[in-house]
Length: 312
Image (cartoon, rainbow, N blue to C red):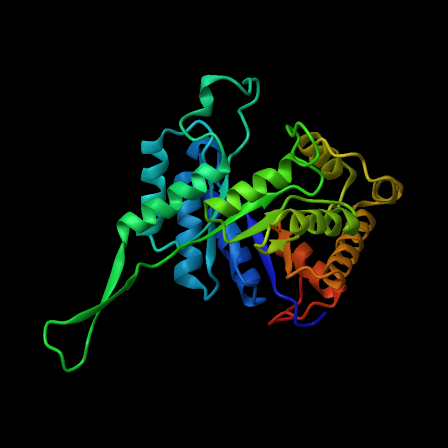
């Protein structure tokens, strides 16, 4: 598995005071040689400034492409367009377009939904803003004064979310694949899955998606679950069924170090299995902790650019 591409997700700190520590984590993650590092985005743009600060730091200080998460829930067209332009002006060319979740206590049909009703519409808007901003390129034709060749403008790369076990608000088992087809039609260039606990969940989802016409790469998102508390929190958010074997192993762990080892081993096993089944790479949810995800890659046999000593 040594040549497998990998990538990471991080999130902006709650306050600006947390940026220096995150920048050190980014340095270590970037030195490992990921294909990209994605940065999350608060609902309704609540972390726009800090997200942009982290993205531009990655852009300036590393050779790794940053991917900007964008959510559209509760946004007007004008607000969403302004944020997209701000990110493009900062040099960001890769996005993860997400609908986003409603705030706690707000009903699905409330007015908070805003102008954009789906991630597919956000994908279209990102592409439209970039096309308007850079509609074409001109290149002078040598030896022909005043003449130029015209080519299409720069395109952005837009990833979207995929849900192997179904979105918590899905009405039927194929709705998630229908949504992925809509995102693909809107211009999405790849997908990243939400977490799953068994390789067959990812592989089965990919097989169904391919049978229905999804052609874009579907990257498995793997989350190291290193404590019973984290597992409980994840299940609350995703509404997935509790993974019996992992849950029992975490509950039986004698201490935090043992639980961490259980989570790393489980994530490494998942990585090996999905890659063996044809996954195009591995995307790891880092929780702003470089040690855990690098240990997962090491346990899975994935070669990184550096093998510096990792401490928690």
